[in-house]
Image (cartoon, rainbow, N blue to C red; front, side, top):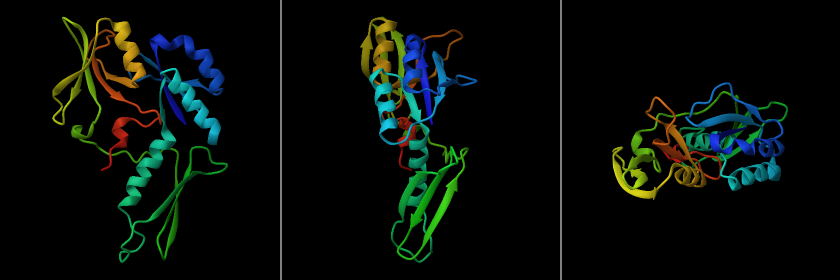
Length: 212
């Protein structure tokens, strides 16, 4: 499934997105300030790649939940064995389950054993990730020179300026082109300033790419 975060400035793209993702449906709740959240099925194979390439070309942010699940399953398997006397990493395959939308098959093999697990649609494998692993998080704030984007260091402190633009419109365009989503605003009214995290072209958020 694709979770699509459409910025308020991108609402005119909605009809085009519906053409690319015919089953697009609005989520009951949108968590992030300035974005409307939608859900859409990810087509299989090349058709799914076309969907993702089109969304990326329009600077529309999305999360590929299937890719996130596969990555988290791979991290889990990397630290697992089928027998306590095994000394080699398991081979790994991850695939959709026919006739069971939202389910995935996780098949692992060693030299002597094989096992298959079926992950239900509500499995996330989510881990508590310390702030030090938030590689790529940025802070946007106002300064006399305009709007400034700061990189954050491993202690969560402002580190260095990575971009500066004079207007909100220009900063919004840059943030979307760089695939940053606005996580926290810290204001009583909608505002561009706050904490952002990057979602990569493959639909995996920066925080989910961490190898624990």
